[in-house]
Picture 1 (cartoon, rainbow, N blue to C red):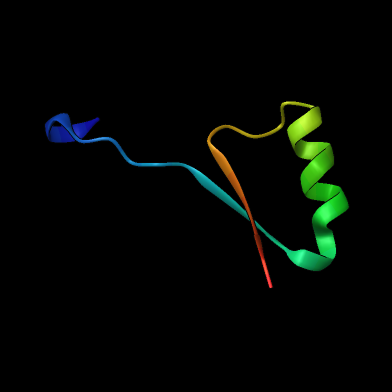
Picture 2 (tube, rainbow, N blue to C red):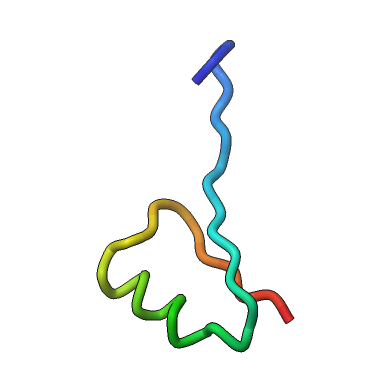
Length: 38
């Protein structure tokens, strides 16, 4: 991290793609947080 700062990793999915977000979490296809957006 530049200058001693960390940048959070957030993966965003539309709510209608909740199943895809869940698969990504189960398959460890994400790093960081997963957010479902309305």
